[in-house]
Image (cartoon, rainbow, N blue to C red; front, side):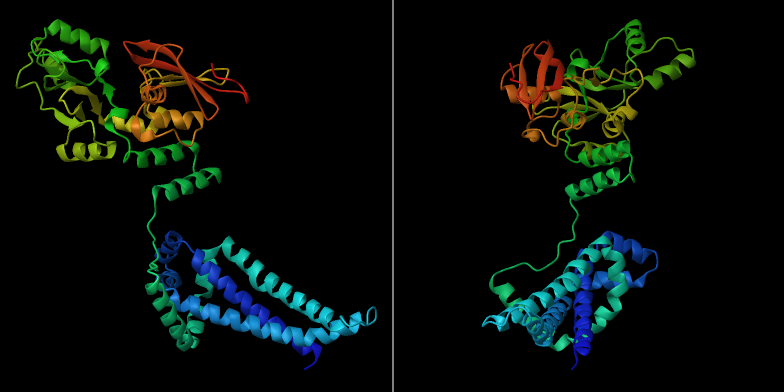
Length: 435
């Protein structure tokens, strides 16, 4: 054959190998979620791609047969066709004993570079740009090629499966999606401008409901306003006027003896009906939902849905009241500042110098996101900013106590009866010592 015929045949082999590389990467990289969307839009080829991904052994065997056969044939053909020409060109400058070896080396490098560039590097990079679109475009010729290579791929898969069983290698593809993968996709969407920053926080907060305990969002015991069973009407009116709550626990003397709760709407109805005297009795006290402090926010939502309630009292293992929580508290945990009433003091306030004033009851996750940390040390051991400080200090904190983590200083500003009221958080300049 002439040099032109050799080059044409070599180009055909390069294109064939490039096609196999393109299909291999696109079929392996095509995401199941996007393929499902294509299938739902009416593209039946996407279903064929998903079916091939589920049973990919035949395709990869056929692909490797084709790629290796083409590479070997291309090497033989290219080296045999190009070496005489390289030897002829080099002989004008060099005619020593290394002439044959130099011609062989140059032919080998030329053919190898051709296959790497046009049969491997470029097709694979193209396939990674839009794997789903390319996969559905090439699925029909791929299925035809698999049928042609079926006898050879069956034999190879038989040997491969025996070796996998011998070494106990799991070959089933895991298509389950983790929270980390969803979070990464959400972050990528926010960076690309598809999602707004606030929408990103909403989605992440919803998934965190599964891991956040009710104690991270509840109104703590010290801040609970309750009615005593024999509370006077004037005292009830005063508490309702001073505190903008819609529900108040009713206790028998002390907070740990919870009887039920009162909805202020019931009181409003009595006042509208000109019934000035309000008695706390069986007819006015509603049954309260009691939950353990070990529940997650997701589990509490299920309980609210099942009981048709929106208010619960949280108790610990000793049956002591830890606090109260409502559906609105969970909504605030999801929506952040958007879900916070306008008259409620902010838990996190950024100052002009870039530092933050953080309330001790602020959920640790909110503090972490605000100051830009990916993780906090051993987060499973605490729920709030105050809990973080107590865990890091390993003692009951006092004013001016501080810790440093990831170049950020956390300092206790105010303590009320051993409870941390407020933290000052600021980034340290590189090399700044912590006092």
